[in-house]
Length: 67
Image (cartoon, rainbow, N blue to C red; front, side):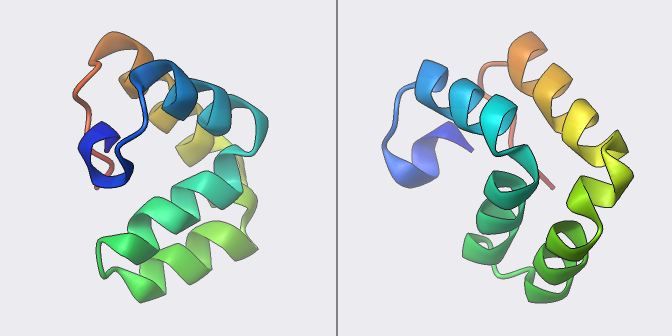
């Protein structure tokens, strides 16, 4: 995830924390997963469970790539 936008890890962490469901959808859209991006956005990050999972994985694995 970090390599796709050229932003530092901390920037991704802050974006994920503050606008997580939008940022998660953007990441999925950039990776070509349009349907998942739309579902992620419309459900608020899969009802916040996906948002929390993405946030924890980003903290634990600095090179974590969103599926």
